[in-house]
Image 1 (spheres, rainbow, N blue to C red):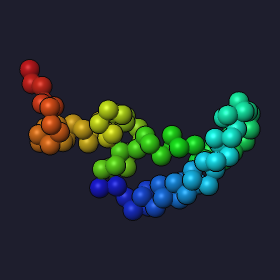
Image 2 (image 1 turned 60 degrees about the vertical axis):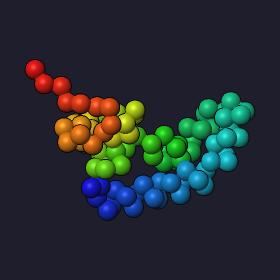
Image 3 (image 1 turned 180 degrees about the vertical axis):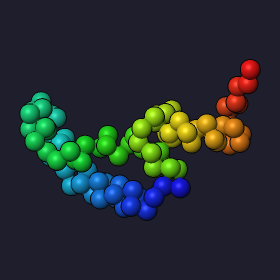
Length: 89
């Protein structure tokens, strides 16, 4: 399970994304990419997406399954992911 501090941090980041969403849309429509770089780093919605919802891990993220490779491997071995089987040699 993800640590509580990671979950709370994600909630704070979501608030920042929501706060700057309208401004980001306006800057993108204008094509002002320099203005986008001046916004806070957490204003980008992509910073929230690539994070495993089970373990909270950011690295080695598999987008198709929305989980880290470690979680994916454990769940595939247990047969919890439909259509995925563990390969054995």
